[in-house]
Image (cartoon, rainbow over all chains, first blue to last red; front, side):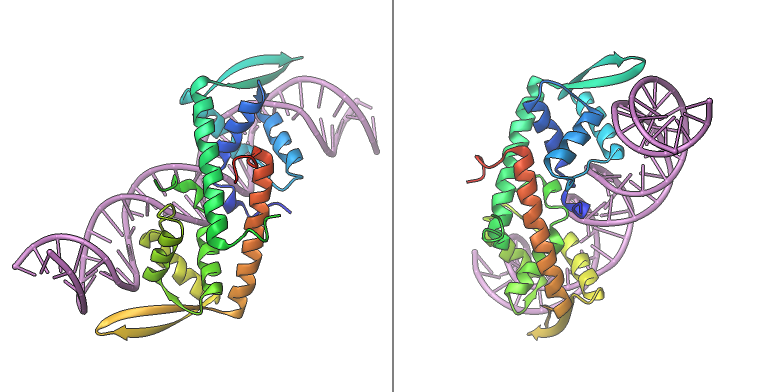
Length: 113
Length: 113
DNA sequence: TTTTGATACCTCGAAAACTTATGTATCTTT
DNA sequence: AAAGATACATAAGTTTTCGAGGTATCAAAA
């Protein structure tokens, strides 16, 4: 079903930043659903990991927020800042580089369709 | 230089098992050097991570060992067991699958030469 | 109409995996 | 003689994430 989650470790920040680079604004729950849908359920972001990470990224100035009310329900939208975009690009290319390296090391090319 | 190491987390066991699938026997230090060389220094396995992991894999029956003396110096060779090979194959294809998924999610295809 | 499930936020203790530091010892090269 | 590479190992601390728990609104089904 979903991946043994050790692999996902270290990629959460990159995922969040990248998705917020591609989308003007997203709220937390929406992010989890988006990842779930795109990956066919293979990657599931847990809320216990998501929210603290979003708060940290905001604190670091990589994301900004604004709150909207849907009826009486709070919804907190996240936007990426300029610094966030830079970090996103840097982290994304680092991940791409890492993938190339590990593919070489483990000879995954034939497995990697 | 080397990757921000969060990415490597979760891949160490897979790296060890796969390299021991491809090589009849390797000792710890040799493993670190091999990884360093193949990856051009991009992935550096620290001894503090390596040895406990090797011990764990042995305890789980995925690796076996035998000791040799080079002069007066101990060298501990690791071999992979049948169970280890199965685990290696499983973990390797899981990693390949994860890479495909994260590549799709983050749109890395263009970056991934 | 009540209860279930989805939406939507959040915190906190515990676990896992690793880093950094430390330790021991041998061998080789300067 | 000292420094650096080889070769093993442990242990405290950090980071990241999971799992469980908590609150509340809204929609649909029973």
